[in-house]
Amino acid sequence: MKTIYKQTAGLAGALTLAVGAVSLTANNAVAGGHSSEMEKCFGVSEAGKNDCAAGPGTTCSGSSVVDYQGNAWKLVPKGTCESIELPGDRKGSLTALDRDLP
View (cartoon, helix red, strand yellow):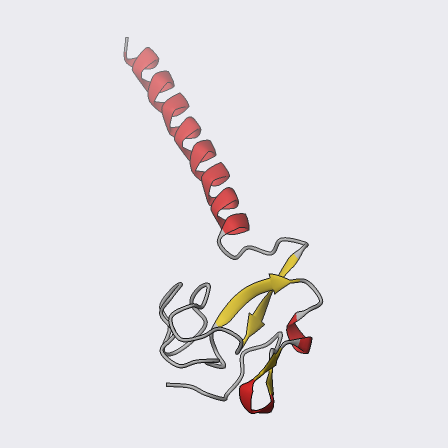
């Protein structure tokens, strides 16, 4: 009888891990993963409208406190980031910036 319980527990554990891995992969793709059609663009979001954590002053989506905060990113169509023009001669960047930090 103990063998059946061990087999059932092992199968349940494996199923839980598999479901968790699929869920994590799906969440990563939707919430800022690296879709081949989108890219992270730093310094282009308005305060409170960033997509996720980037550095000091951000914890996750919607947590930036400064417009165009250099270490906060937003997903944009691939190939458009560095051409986004913003007030004050700012532009988007594919890497975190040291400007406009809280």
